[in-house]
Amino acid sequence: MMKQKHNALNGSGNPVINARNLRKTFGNLIAVDDVSFQVFPGECFGILGPNGAGKTSTIRMTYGFSPMTGGTLEVFNLDITRNARTIKSRIGVCQQENNVDPDLTVQQNLEVFALYFNMPPPEARTQALNLLKFMALDHRKDARATELSGGMMRRLVLARALLNKPDLLILDEPTTGLDPQSRHQVWENLEELQTKGLTILLTTHYMEEASHLCDRLFIMDHGRVLVEGKPLDLIRQHVGRDIIEVVEPSETLRAFMRSWNLKHEDLGHRLIIYVDDGNALYHEISKDHCTGGCIMRMATLEDVFLKLTGRELRE
Image (tube, rainbow, N blue to C red; front, side, top):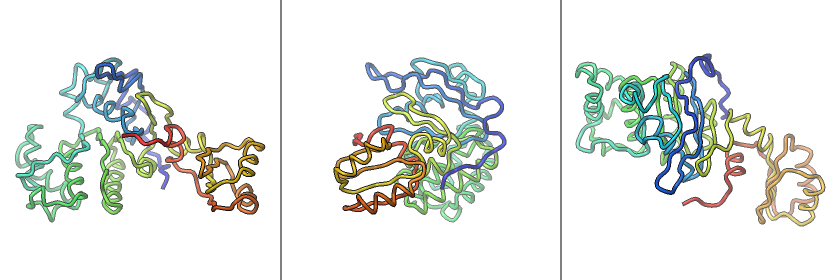
């Protein structure tokens, strides 16, 4: 499902995040290199990239966990270097790790975390119970956190990030390792929060998740931004509407591709052809050139991602 909803707040008013020329180095390693972006109220903005692209380094700078090496960063119109405490009071962060307290119950994990925000105990309890109900965890409120399934644990971490009623929710790979049912349940929770005006900054390895949730996103690699835009616009601009895949393509087909100057990737055992309207071409290829098998499908954000960042493994 490609997200093409529109919130009236998106793209208007002062940006919630205004990052300009961000830079982060670790010794001689340049993790983030001149990255600029804005996130507007009520928007879900995504940061995509392969392992080691600089996603987590970028997102950690936005909530003050990792100091910038260079550039400027404003959150809620406040400079992160001078107003980190105020900014942190207004954001919620769901990190990659399920770093809950194993000795506490589900409800206690939330109530103890509320102490960081000087929340009075009665308010903390009410907020904790409301969030557990919202995340469909109220029936497990007295269970030890370690007794939860992976999906439940992830929803608990997300509930904790919402405890202080943040204006900005930062999610670093929120559904990694979840089964499809749990992932879709988290998506539904996030979409409901966004309809109420919550701004979301998201990193993910799941292209379907980015397409489903993000109003806009950028793809980065080697610390730099490659492209930025709406998911559907990026697909149309970089790969077209349709994809034709041919298994074990013949030399005759390769010559045909070159003669018509068609956009394609030749992977040796497989040919990937990018077209805006593939019906006629698919009919011709399947009739005359398809010996090992061929399919036509709609282009996705994953096609854009692989075309721009490559197909080699990143360890």
